[in-house]
Length: 247
Image (cartoon, rainbow, N blue to C red; front, side, top):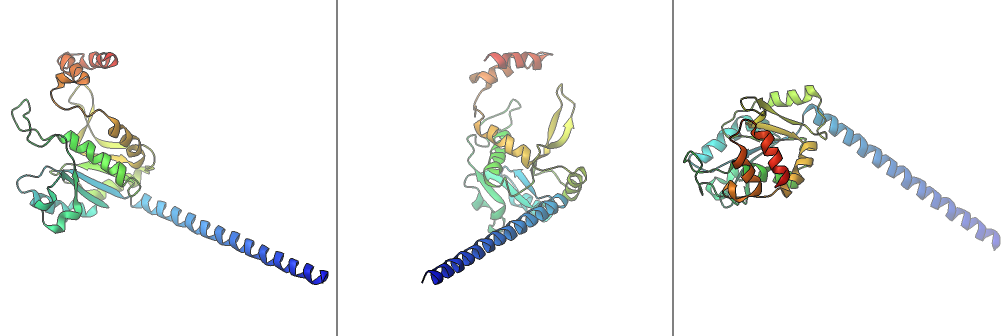
């Protein structure tokens, strides 16, 4: 009958609307809850920022003892702690330390050359930039700040965290922190401890991935030739800049 058909249609329409409204309300509640959790997490991370402590590490004498000391002391205060070693060196350590080790494929091998002072080369810079590339590619969203710390440096992480909290640094803004030295013509950040915010790492990472990987004598490469040619002059930075513009 037409009346019954219309009644059923109205009931069907009513139930459909109830279901749609229910889904909208559920979606709204879920999104509100997620937003609240995200905000709470961000506020928590502002008061206790997550920091990755990265140590470029050359395996040599007493290597395990050095790692053990760091793990048992200031390393406990890091959100994440990683030692960056050469391929195939993990098995030199006890299994309890394997979770702290990251093997990176070094082009230059430790001790494969000699520096101006006759000492064997360590190729620290390659290890450092490969370390930062690993962090950028694998754990960028797991931490607010990323450090580079030498294995012979003792860091009081509580003070580092307190400094970051008091300054109110937004980790998604680019911040680069370290101790500035003035003993050369251009101020530089000393190597024992440096810190990148996530915002800085997100900008530095692609640059490190795409930079030319020059290897060998400086005279073999166009950028290196400029360094060799003008590093001995008093105004070498100006001359070096001009040189790099035209190579």
